[in-house]
Image (cartoon, rainbow, N blue to C red; front, side, top):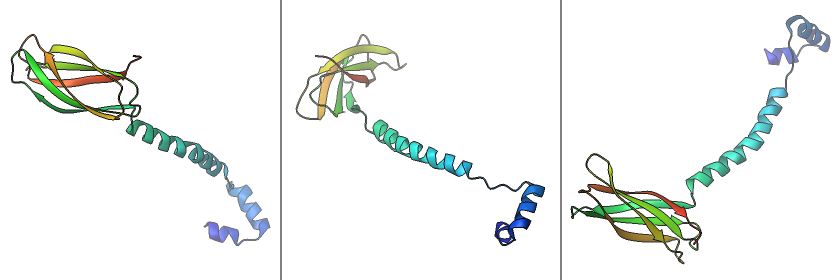
Amino acid sequence: MSANYSNLPPETQELLAQRYGIKRRYGWKITAALLSLIGLPWLLWSAWHFANPEIRVTLISFQNEKSDSIDITYKVDRRNPSSPLTCTLVARDIDKNVVGEIEDKVPASKDSSVTISRTIPARIAPVNAAVLECRATGS
């Protein structure tokens, strides 16, 4: 219809525009272009920022060979290896209750990736272990 409308003489186009309310609107295109110019860079930045966190922790393994403790091995990747970290490690029983918890200090180093093994003491027999969080500390 728009192709036929553009072939009409200007007087007829004006008459049809008055009669049927045909208006040429470009406002939504300008708004969409502005939102794309602002939104697309923000979307790319936020995707990169949250996909590459400052500190990333990966649980490698845990061994529960003793009834009063559990051994855990985990890997810490950090963007700034010169900052020390404090990691919270927990041991859980069969009902997923926390039966042991320690704060593990990870010193500053030259390597951005560090693999650490620790033993978490427990009050009753643990069945699994986890790293709750790792956070940067002042010293």
